[in-house]
Each structure stands twice: as structure tokens, then as C-alpha cells.
Image (cartoon, rainbow, N blue to C red; front, side, top):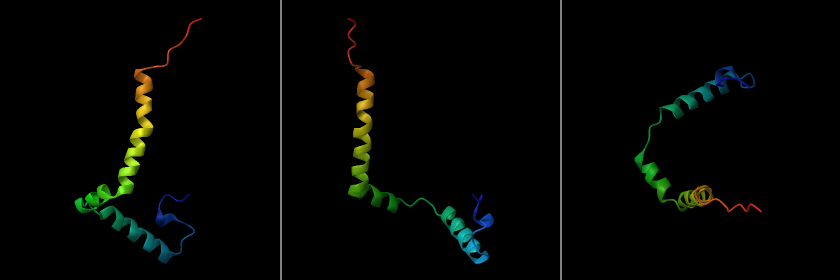
Length: 72
């Protein structure tokens, strides 16, 4: 597995240049509050957050109220 696009043996020289330019552009982008508001207003994001909450919530409940162990 190549370490980065410049050492990718399976890419042609032009493809390496394009890949490196895309990586540089991707790293240069900054946080945009408009995109954050858009993501938080998307129902799929809210659904994913609710699913994560409801999946992990039982773990905390089980730790606080462990099942009774019968010692017979």
C-alpha cells in the first residue's frame, strides 16, 4: 500500500498530480457554519444521533442496575 499519492505505483504521472492537488485542496478547506447548520437540520443526521443514543443508553442502565444474581 503506497504511503501517499506521490508514491502510488499504479497511478500515471498525470493521475498522481491530480490526486495530490485534490488532497491539498481537501486539507485547505475550513469549517463552514452553514454546512454544520445544514447537517444538523437534516432528518437523517438527527435519526443517526437518536439511534446512537438509544443503542448506548442500555449500557449505562445495565451498569447502574445490574441483574440480580441468585446465590442458591
